[in-house]
Image 1 (cartoon, rainbow, N blue to C red):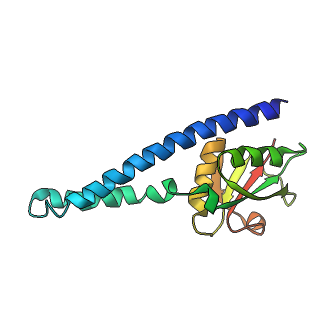
Image 2 (tube, one colour):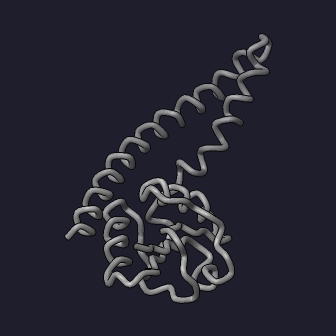
Image 3 (cartoon, one colour):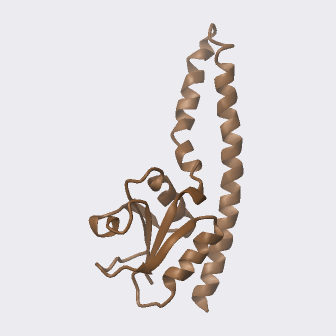
Length: 159
């Protein structure tokens, strides 16, 4: 019952943070576009040098902010003795818009804490970081034992 309550709580927090981050990134994108549009007008002035720098600075966070949860398949693996832990986490992530490719068990080694791993697939690192933030855990590059499962995003849940 406690795990179900926590799953519901995390889903609500994730939904709030997801809806808040979408509106922030949508507002940030038009600002960056408007700065680019203004740059040709101000090329003769000294502000032309600063205008190209603003989009370059905002281009770095955009890949993280532009991750579409429906474009990334997520694998959720249980690394504990708690039955249904992966399914509960998968439900939480599904409620936040992520596509769960599969749930299962991870028995290759004992992972000390729930961790979101990313592989070499396009957008995997940004998606893993976003999922980790939503779950309140860390994101790391996948070791060989985890990358054997997927080159995308793998969430290994523990107690």
